[in-house]
Image: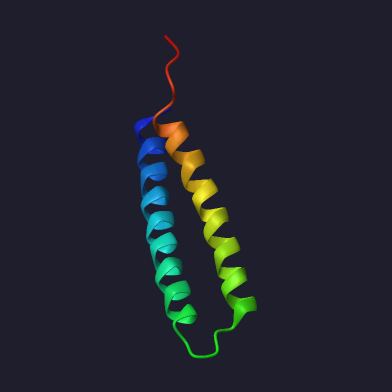
Length: 68
């Protein structure tokens, strides 16, 4: 992997982590409402899980497991 590719992956990773945190805050705010929109919360949680999977994929690329 070139330095440029690694830099791009790290930038993407930072953006995805920020979006993941933002979704977490949005979900918390929606759940705190007197009449929360459960469908919207479910959609946001699904998107959050997809982001978490993508974050894990990038982290695995950047820090591969070394089998001794």
